[in-house]
Length: 308
Image (tube, rainbow, N blue to C red; front, top):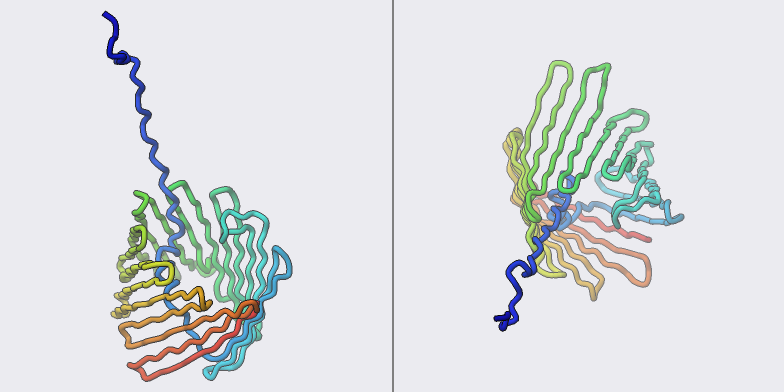
């Protein structure tokens, strides 16, 4: 008797292919763990500032900054940046050279290089007039789901002093990242190390990050309510200074008015806010900020104009 039901033999049944899991993402740099939360808070403003940006070519741009303040002498800064042809992402271009010099001759410079597909290098130099203050060299390797970084700060073979910082981050799941930081410093008569553990959990609309070590703790929480409203909460504790700080910040975007408003309140009785307003079709951005410390009875405000 034939197969009247039209069923295929057991051996001929198609097998389901195993479900392929998506590879884990790269966790990024250790220094960017709290970036989303910090971008919510307003930057300190004091005095009057004029910034003029000028794009000279697709690779080179300069900026002129004039700052006048009641707390110090007027200053001028010349900022120059060069970006190469190798673009890995909208925010990463190699090689990159950035320099900033003020009217006194002090220089801050950074050089970013892509040595290989996964290996990056950075050099940072800082001078105060004719004297070197800081020279730092970084090497970063980005794997498929981990990042390892080694930093040497102010290495001095003659004086036998150095600061070495090692970072490591590992993506355990698509949402959870764990890692750590080891800071080692050595100079004549003194030597020590500080270990810090870090964790980051990223959900759809919020990100929670925690750093805990012998030097203290740093926790942050970022929440994106919608396209217009973002909030952030930070907690920092320093065991050496015996000091703790709690801060709350918010970010409000009004696209129809071309305005961005940032504000903060912290446990030191400080309140502050910065309002930014773009003036299309002109390439001009106006910013007005005010900060008040009730505990120390200090108030300062600032106004800036950015062209370009």
